[in-house]
Length: 279
Image (tube, rainbow, N blue to C red; front, side):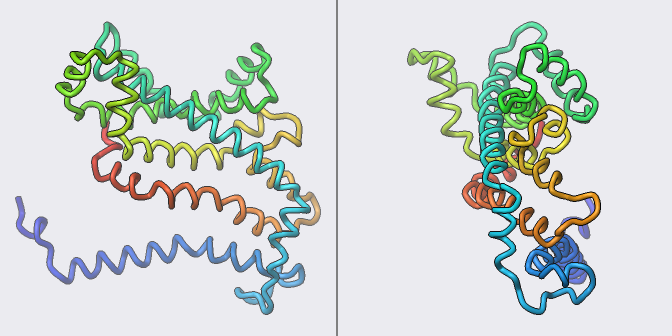
């Protein structure tokens, strides 16, 4: 292998660092713009300087009260946590079955799950709508959470299977010899050793479900049942919109994502370094 690829020069490393810093700053520009807009008064929203002359911190409380964000928050928290919990548990068990409990057709079924990953959610909106309406779960948070779980299950199986394939089968066999059932092996042996992959799945699914818009827009009819993305979008008026309040509401909506990541970042980074995203 080329020695220059293994040991790049200091000049190449410097340019790589500069490029990474520039890309990070470019990525942070929309966040900085949103914070600046959220602190502006109505007169400064259109035109004016990038930074507000006098920060209006009351925009956050006004957005919370005026848009009824408390209800949207409760809806999103229930749907997201229920769907993430269901997807994580079912995906973990399914990955264990595909990896350690080989059965006839297991590889074919697993490949079907992989194919589902590449299908965009918008292509499944009508089938999901018909199915949920048939079982009387249309316009319900339970039905929306089940739809989220169905869409996230293939990805969770992919991540967990990548971990399971490298897990020692001797440990599982030893647990079976000690009299452990399959459910006990999953709960007492595998899960305590899978904090990295579990954190990876939780963060990825939480981010996707918390910000999901299309399914929530179609599968929820009543405005009081809207999740945060749909609820905030509904506040944009036809002739006039208070973009400073909408920006403030968007920043409030992003807080749970940062909290989840801060709590799970160590396990998330460990899961990434262990190759949790490798099939």
